[in-house]
Amino acid sequence: MRSQVKLCKIEGCNNPSWSGGMCKNHTPKKPMSKGVFQQIRDKGPNVPTFQKNVNEMREFFLDIWSKKPHRCENCDTYLGNEPFSYMFDHILEKSKYPDLKYEEENICILCLDCHGDKTNCKLSDFMKEKIKKVKEIFGK
Image (tube, rainbow, N blue to C red):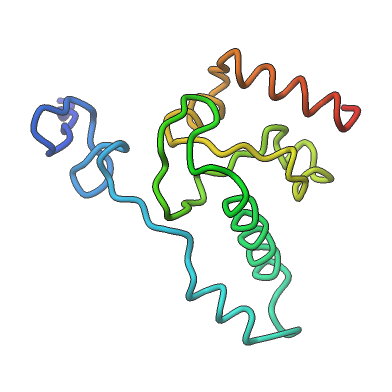
């Protein structure tokens, strides 16, 4: 016999739960870690390459966050004052275009829903245009 899907514990929400009894929309998100960043900085040249890459990516994202309005570039939702890693989307995926990983023109600030849609190839006209523009900029 199959078990029933549990629903989000937030009243009126009928989405399936997956973390702490809440759906993806109601599960609290954590800001980008500051503690790990400081630990990496303190260790200096003895830090493993992976940790250095995480540190570089975090600094890169925070630099972009300081320059752009804190709004989803696709739907204009206000994102608050605290950056979360899901808010930064590589327009051309870093797995396919590793040379564009640290290119500011290749980063789009998105809300969780818009980022999920783009990741799942549900592209809005705005995202299709951004992808086209970035490909033109970098000759891809």
